[in-house]
Image 1 (cartoon, one colour):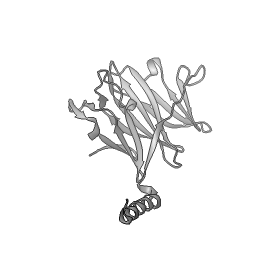
Image 2: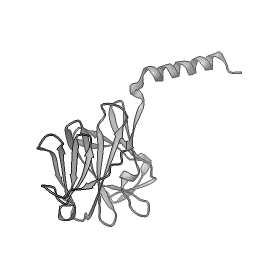
Image 3: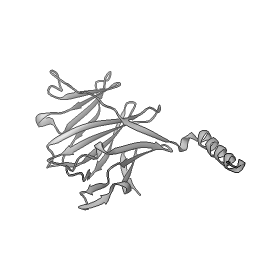
Image 4: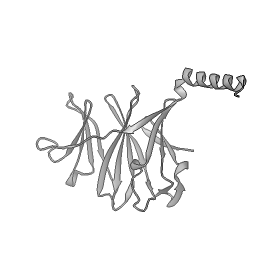
Length: 196
């Protein structure tokens, strides 16, 4: 028979969890957006992604390194980004969103040659688009695939944390293999920081 003490401890723990929702993890999910090819105008030949009031233009062909983000109703650029990694040949965009109101969208631009070379990270909130930085890592899964395929993004106490569900990760900057469970990043405004 369960003692009254155990029942009391469980009840207090449950009440603490309910009363302090800020300590709960808020998960982000992969927001699949289908691009459309732009057939005329300034961005002819680009792919465009529609994200609420934002239009995200991703270059193709000679412009594949270019990313333009504009507000649908304002004729000015919110962000222009040009990748400079010499070996890159392929770029893929992925978007991550939480159901919790007020949290930003995280956008990852995977940079590849024959394998993933890393990811550029962007933070999107309302009409503000901020480039946070580049993480020079890939999954060691025989294909050296993008970490965007293995990422878990969550908001914990108003911090946005990236972790990964793959065992081995290549750190290109150190040319070493690391345990995926030990690699975590925090996205802050205008920066991405590796945390322990």
